[in-house]
Image (cartoon, rainbow, N blue to C red; front, top):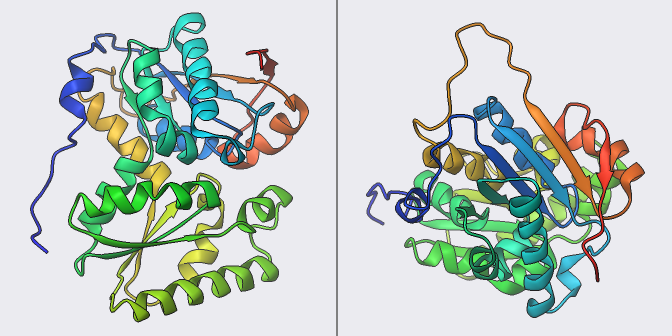
Length: 294
């Protein structure tokens, strides 16, 4: 595989659509609250932006819905963030929506839209020397083969595996539990066996679900020596930094920045407030309940 740097292919089109403010309002959307890991990574890199997060908790899981329904739900959420909250840029912090509805979201709003799959695949390409990549994700994301396609477009061979037990374990709070560690080992052993059967030599593992960053310490202990772990949430945040290059006012040296964050949910506000701080690693504050319809 040729190690040729590739620019963010979606950035010129995004830049052409605006982003002139020095303190932009960034909308972040997920079907639940796992996307708060993406928001956390964004805040670390762009603390002076204003953030509006929407979790469509009334209609999750998206993975059990049709592509058409997912597109409708995601477009409604995007329009809420842009039209009612003034978002000038959207990050789709949901792998299912990024895989199945990114085009519909882009058509629904007049602002730049960034998903998590393309940045994750690009980060994997930059990290891999063998050109062979493993991806763990939810059932819906794996069935979409979006990561495999994005990796293949960049000259990578990828094997994907659904890990359905990991999300409920994270939401149960078992992020450093022996049972979780054992399940991760089982999943990765199965994935490694499949890679060997296909003659692959994977040196990179992509975390294709926004819940999985909370399991990163366990996952890094379970991978083989030399295998790099790519967090698609971190990769998406870095892509946003590239997009905002020179357009966000930098913080003064040594300054303490109080980032403005507003969270909305379509249901389960109490659960959002209870679990959200675990994903965001800071209090989410008051979560406002909204109704986007059926």
